[in-house]
Length: 621
Image (tube, rainbow, N blue to C red; front, side, top):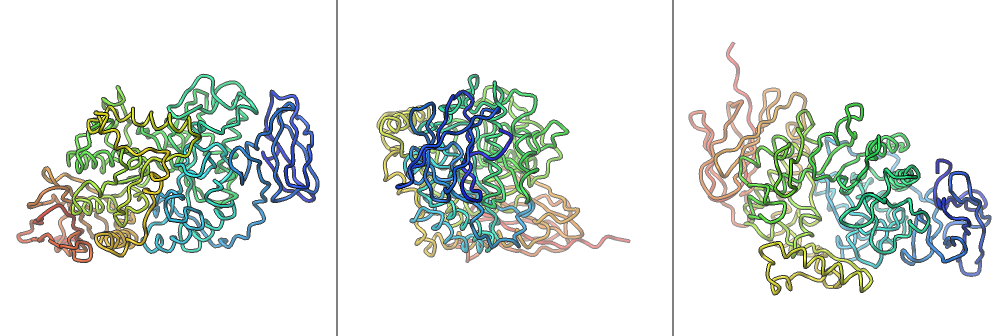
């Protein structure tokens, strides 16, 4: 599968088709466009691919493959499934779209602020076009890139996207492939990058036809908790790896995407000589004509994911660092079930996590039953992605509660400052910036039998959680198959102008403006960052460089004095903002700042945060 692209490729006078099916004797292309039906035998090449050119076909024509004279199956590399994942594939010419983003230069990692969204529940329309209507809001907010949850087509009309089976085709319920292109083009016009979440660790449980073309698509030795694993290290793994690399490349090239978020890379089991992640990033960067960001989701805390391949690493750009979220959840909301039992939530451990990028760097994990993590020393903080919320950490909760649903608003504002003023790369989850009242629940639209099993498995999973140990408590868990579960998860954008949402939105905008404009937060040359716990309730982040200092003081609980340890005390402090300023707090109780006698003290009436700017003392000659 090294010659020519997979799927349907538009050429002068017709369309060329290519599909890998090495164990099949015969493959026929069956054109299903009304009035133009025909069956065309394809020729088998030495590499196990069936190929053929069909004249007078073009964009919009429908087709499927017949394998060994039986059945009709969609193209594994289909660019669009207009009638669903079981229906015919549609020929799409990606070169026909008129792009207007020639001047777009991408988003460098040092400027990255991510905004994760689910297309179907982000707006009432639930489409790519609906998401495009909110791009001006996101640009004004101050994020620099949106991250789309997976859009590869899936069975039914509502799904998180991690059950995708048509990996090259944007879900038809979100729109046509050109609608996704228009979303990206418009995002670039307003100054936003676009990243896409892709799933290469497993196939969805329904509608996955790859194994009908070849059993070698699926691993015979590795399993995942969610479905069949791709064959990355077994017999005939080369064409499977090529298939996934081509998938990544197509998303980036044909849709002008700025990067990929690689789902659950800890489940990409590959015992071969060169791990698939290292091969993927190298081949993608060699082919894609623009700079791209490749970000892993991985709970192992492996610094090797970020190190160059010459040093035994995978050379990815960044990794989701869960420990920050887990420590703060334990600290602020008291979570202790599941993986939260590994975390104390103490301010000292929060400070360690911010200072290092993650907390576990080889210590024993009770949840995983062994050591977890590696030493991240020397890794740029911006290569760790921090978050207070994301789709998993909200949607995998039984009731889909967001963090701001469960803690005091003052503490939520303080945690927001910590997220947006930390040196790591921040990620926001849709609606977080205005404390959206809607939950984000787990929802599916499988056929009835599979849907019932999915719901039962979910209810069974929560038996281990203290809040749902009794049957009557588990009855409160929404049915993922119910339409109402999906509808409850949709954002209601009419609420953003009312309190308490408007004041939270003003805080996010102010903090992201500060992050964008303040050189010390942007990462000015020679910058030093000191992170320290201050007692049991607060921590301080001090940025210093070139005679200037920025101090961020965050009190996560209670009231009282905070006297941060200042490494480079300036001559004077100027308050930039506090979370208790009237634009951000409907009932403001601003902390009192006292810098008398050279000792800085802040007195808080409740949880909160303050950002102060200082000028350095004149050094004696």
